[in-house]
Length: 321
Ligand code: SF4
Image (tube, rainbow, N blue to C red; front, side):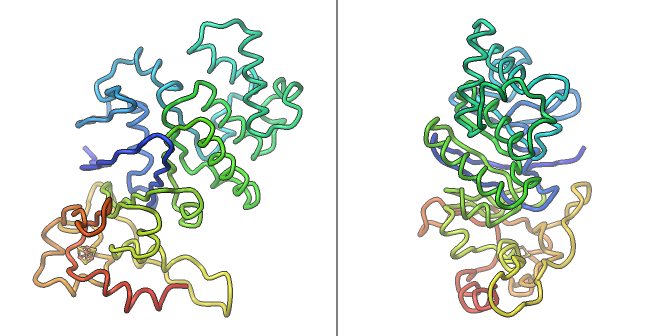
């Protein structure tokens, strides 16, 4: 048994975007797949509660999950090429997603598919609706995936690294499109990424994950402006400086732990340069709780350090690129 995610808890109102940030294997995608009910019940065990628009997902039967996926929540992935079926036209795939939830004729579904392609910025949608995925560029395929995800007006859109496979200018267009559509559709968005630049652009709140647990959570301006956790400091320090003299990179030392052998105490302790500041052996023996900051509404951090604000202001801030 691998505990891929432990004790994760968050809520997200309609119209807001939560960025889930962390390295590979931190539990970002696994937890979001659980929200979609995508884990195989024979191999995965999920306990607790996951509610989307009042619907309880944990324990939901496959038939109800099929109805929920698409209209309750929809997901887009990193590589639209592998999410689209190569033998069917883009239009057929959007129409199928629409008809699965609405008992409408093919011609009505086709009209809806054309409308959606137009809405996500595909030029000449009446002609393009009959194209196959290989006839679209990478950016256009991701736009088509977004059209398919939103065709049933879901309450929640989960975007799992949707811009990672795209070049930088197309990335910016897709981020603008998601933000724009969110305003129109009013859905909640969970945006999974390891790119803090993307987070600054799109998120209202950030949840930083490490080894299957949330280690810092709060509004974007607080987490990026005055983070409290040494791991978040490391993520910020490892962003390369784009202006001024070239600076050496400051990667976080070591590698994320295997989930088969998560370190005792604070899972980050083998990589943390601040653990000697905590008295005794608490960092290596006692897992810190995710403690809400009473003075800072909506913010929480999982670390034994007593004075993280002061360390950030005096030691980390001067080191940031
Ligand atoms: Fe570092 Fe200790 Fe805080 Fe973990 S609890 S992040 S090891 S100082």
